[in-house]
Amino acid sequence: MYVIEILLKNTAMPMSVQRKTVEEATTVYQQVLAAMRGSDLTLLELACDRQPEKKICVMTDAIVAAQMYEKSGATAAGKTPGFVAFAAS
Image 1: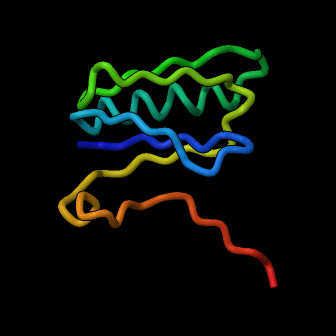
Image 2: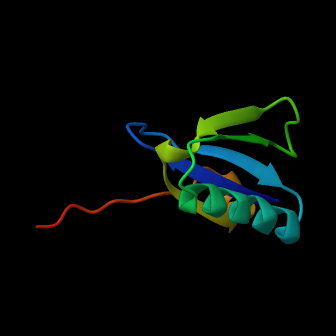
């Protein structure tokens, strides 16, 4: 299973959807990147393969970052990769 996480402005927790194959996950990740690069203010709607009833819709200008990773046994135990910010000292 592959996870695509999206971090939004002024939101502490990322939103995520899952895809079964790397190809499907890459397609969704590329959709998010294209939305971030675009100059039009639009809505991006995504659904989750694992939980089909789980859907998210975001304004493209609110997307700050995105990442894609493979969900493995270690991540299922609560050690999920995520966005990490370090303050400059």
